[in-house]
Length: 473
Image (cartoon, rainbow, N blue to C red; front, side):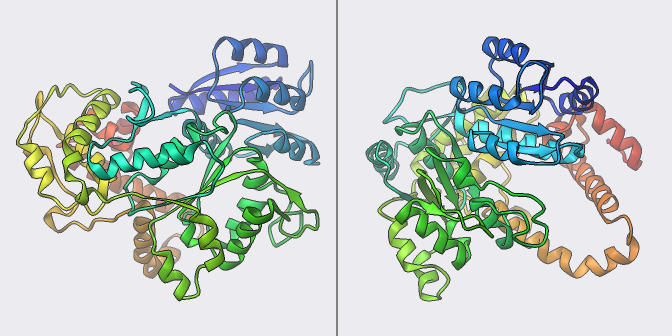
């Protein structure tokens, strides 16, 4: 269970935050002074801290400096109630994950907490590679006895300790982020921050600001100064995931960082120096993008000083059995299922499939099989591929998001006509109802399995079934 420590002398705010965060499944500890926070975190390290800027016995900034010295990878979110953000900006420079101005909405702080915990997981959860480290129970594994994967392991070992830029290439679902994290964890920068930025998931208009920050008034909506990820990650490592989706203007700034180690915030004149190791990944053919004028050739050669090319799963089918057994044990543990055996005939079925979604699709297939399993053995009957029964398969979350957009765009005028003043809540309710119906149908009405599929509590599911007048059978 992930542990969050809230440090604030406002008892009502602590109560306001503790209950909903606890309901999300986090262990939440509240304290009201800096010395109390130090004592708690020294006894049981947290996964994330929500830190008030003004405490009775010291400033939040002083406590931040102390905590970042002792716990450099722990994300700390600064909460401040004061109109000026100068102190919050200073906090970012000293290593805060982010800051938020009081008063804030619960949804806003919840999103920030989720991002902070994800960053913490990426930095702290080990990636075990047979060629570089012992097997660790609580770790992600890069698995493969095939010759292509053995070459990948050797290459990771060769590039990890230097500060050279590495371009990681491969289809969606092949494990590019795992390789990036392995390089980081075996590097000289392993004790300082690692941040992963999905360039495809952030709108083009916001990506440059996300990476380099902006000054107040730099553009419409820029109501305050913002520190970017490069400045925030000084001395650390950044993964530019799906780098092929960047605009040319953002590419130019990335090139300058790689060449000169400097940039300016949007709307600013101050030149900011940074020391950041850059890792990049892509599933796109950058050479074709260069010919189309969509990717800078000079940036391409800067990024590919060292290149790691991950093979698709269909080209290393000898690894399927080991991967399946790994995911079987991993998800059995995570889901709390009691499936004890794998029917050996499964491996023939798995090996005959083409795996367009690669290792990610195999993981999802095993997980789905465990949820649907009716006995102690995982059988062929529970192995359902994404493309069976005419289902459409998407190689990545980005592909899925793009297709959802295509489906929703033509419907938007009708949605607006029906719910002109309540788009958000009304549409979410319809989607939630649909998801619960599908989860119950997928699991044959088994509420325990449906809650695991949906990622919600049993009480929440019961409440939603009643709310929407659904049948659980």
